[in-house]
Length: 148
Image (cartoon, rainbow, N blue to C red):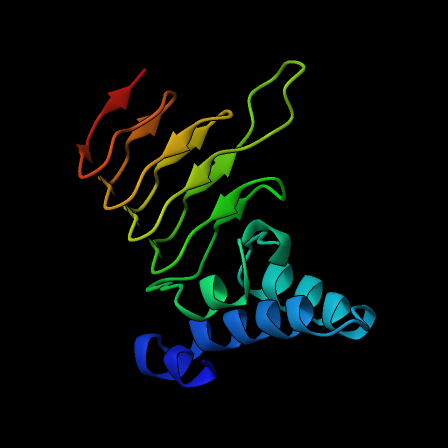
């Protein structure tokens, strides 16, 4: 599984994904959590939590072409084989529901996209650069602009 990380990503993404992988895999999380917070938040200005992925394979198949300024809420769930570009936000909206989006398999998220609220992005969806997604998206769809 780890070989997938090295074939699909550049150096910076490999470092980021390996930190997420080790924190999710091992029971002793403290040293990996410190490294994750120092490296990912300090150098890359990103906030990605290992609990945001459905399993370890989802972390291994993740593609981060430019792993800078990516914000993924802890309650988000990301499926297998997803591609997330720089300056993307997968977060929550204000209110009582503190759950973020669920991304299916093979989802492409373009740069500077916002996915806000508790919604479901199904499999094989492409979200264009600068898109704002506020409601559920069906399978095999392409989203550009504002989707509310």
